[in-house]
Length: 129
Length: 441
Image (cartoon, rainbow over all chains, first blue to last red; front, top):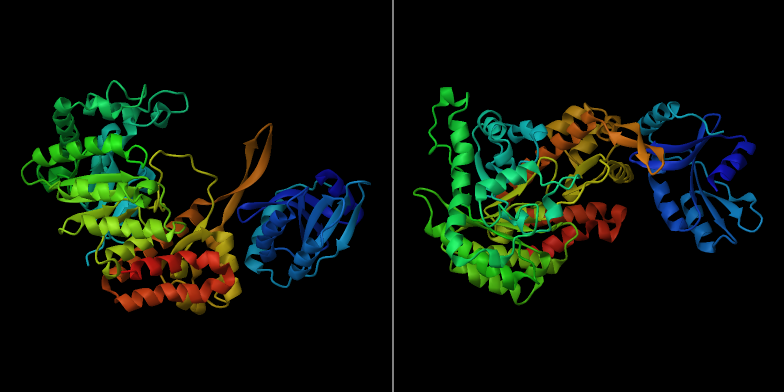
């Protein structure tokens, strides 16, 4: 799923890094476009875990997304993601196609000192795409 | 209430913290016997030169021989050198069993118990005092072996679980009785009680234990409850721990908790009617520990959050502090969170410097067939977190010694009120449980 997701994000104009460490966690994907930083946690199942993993990313990411692969996207995932301002990327299990269910909202809660640390750490990680 | 502050020795890398934040900050050091057996010169130098001549206790660690041999083997399946050394000092029945098979209660026939006790006490009386006496540092101090004796001698003991207490209790009792009978002049004998949580919770085992040791005229006890994390323990476990400690200390005897957190510190003070005379922890936390060691996980920066009396992951601490607005200025941080010397130095007037507690560097780590990138705290970040933790522990012990009951309870309540809306009920439930247990008649 991750390699296909990288392709999808690349077509959307993002440059993508994989496995980016952030405060003792590792984000599945960090996609950058211009100065904007988008964190993506991808899950085949257990989207609740993905939502949990996203919380620390609020200190550093401009946008946060959960990517799920399923036949349908549950209403509760949509509600939870919208409450937090997270976006949802859906991979249709039948067709394999990716699409935006909801776009993320700009996170106004970025903590600049932590973001600067992230920037420095990201410089050491090559682009996957 | 005295509320003595003890620290358990873990490794030589930590030795400089035994005089931190200041020499004399601790009542004493608790040393594992296998370390004393394996590195007596290093341990003697540590005690003489790095602790400001603190008191010390040697945990004889006799329980190490009752577990599966794998518990005392290295990754190559060989017995650990330090345990082998210790077994040679202790002799039979552990010497031939060490690393080969577990020692069993029936191996301690009544006629050999006295000699075993003699060797275990003798080890504590000689291994470090004689090395310290002959050390370079002592050339100037001129202490005798008698001056350099441990704070107390610990009787040999074995781990008691609810299911095995019937098999081991009599052995433990007779070893304790023999230790008291063989007490050297001027020495004190403490009896270790190393128990599973099941023993604490059992309506029959705990009273049986209390009755058994009530009649043993030891000078004190040391208590270690297997893997008892006070932050996650049920009220029933904590209440029974408090009840046990109060029963043991009722005749004025010392009771030291070998691995305890803020609940035990409070229990040692006015709220617990002096249930413990002292509480120990390690420099790198060690507020709870499994009797059979388990491997550690990936190291991660943790900040001791004073309102919660709890060490939390840096990222969680940051999240809490920002949601509360406690990082809006250095002044607010120091007023609401911590004004210890470490925090004042690290923050240096700028709340953005809190990031220094979470400093990390990424490294490639082998996982399965490939490598993954993982973050590890820098040594500077670990040092900051550790120094802050040790400062906070000093403050907690001092607070427990001097504050009134109401001030202690108010402090717990403040943690609940301040952070419940941020961390949820589960995040503050330990504070509520401690308050409930410590105010239950």
